[in-house]
Length: 327
Length: 280
Image (cartoon, rainbow over all chains, first blue to last red):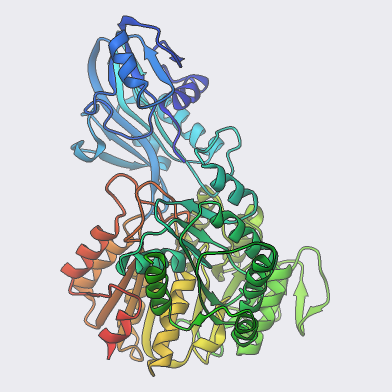
């Protein structure tokens, strides 16, 4: 999960890192002597014109892209550095990344020096050490995977964090920061389902992140468009399956493809959830089921009784779902 | 191979999932010698329970520990196992990444193996299973399978078995952003294993493990490698179930992985069923 610039800067300030004077506005308050920065999560804001003097015209434009704008004092920058703490996934440790050439896209920053955090005492330029230590405290206190300052500006004799980029660990809950979830994504999260809303018309329910991702790919391969990603997780109950159906049907898809490879997940439980749901609701769209693995015979019998067709192959099932959705 | 009939295994965490899979592993023939529980005593499925790893391995020789411990306690349990010189398989999902790197640092120092976190485990078919995968789909044979995803590996293994292609080993490396054994270590193992004839690599979007694997294959792997990469149809900046499966900016895309692997001479299956076609 990424934090917005102002959220990161608030943390910087709390941990003793100097940031420019500024405030967040949610409506037009022009002050052309100041800099307006759109609080969007994408990079390349400078290039995209999302950082500009806080004139009425510019603010009107920025508010088309976001609901919050950070208005800050302009700095007379003498030099820009790149400084970050992140996790080296190969060495599996926290590392410091530093460059004398900051202020540009990190991909194009040259001469990046990498040093394990445990060797901080070897960091030559001592002016940066207290800032690095503060960044480390933010990292451990907030379970961050990246704490980046780009640029770290030298202005008026001080090092000032002119921007912030913080990515928090998704394996840890961060109730203090609201995730940008759709209503259905929130509902799914509350029910322990992993759900991502997409733009197509074929609803998907499966088990296991990799298998569901592959299911989206196979649907797309056969020319279909998926309405969502939904992973039931391992060992789902009939009730959980009903909840999943409830969520995917709210987007009014034109077909539903259920793809289950039963391991810990029992096919009969999934079938039971589907049959129960159908008994309670008037389901008008075609439902295509592919189910193999643990208790597939019981599931097959139950589905046959209820006239639901079951496929053995995920690709045949997906093809059928695409044909049905296009009818 | 990495594990066989004689590999001694202990189980840490015998709650609902842990005790269920302890039974299934034992039924499969895994040499489960003891289990560790902070709350239960006596025996579970005929396996003696101990309060600590140290006690558990006093009278029994163990090589691996498999962890079903909840995420918030997983680091402590993992460090305890490593401290007693055991390799570990971490089934647990949702361990804070900063905890994971502490685990990895200790493992590195002691030259021990960590598989996972967030993995379905490893299986050497008809020999030993240290994991949660459905046993019936595996057959002994000569294909090594290395996968980030559990269920997608099942899907492909099922097709291999149905087409008479057994497996020498199947390794789930895990879906987290930081994992222990990665594709490179798995490839090294498979390349040096006389029982393995070809290697199936199952990757997905996010990170650069597949790109690194491609570099390694180019220089160090002589055996046939075929791959499937999940997530081609996934939009940017959407996390797809696995914490590690996200395209950020231009890194971690399926295209980048497929391109790198093709450059290394790896055959890429466009559909999961394409894997078996490349192996026939």
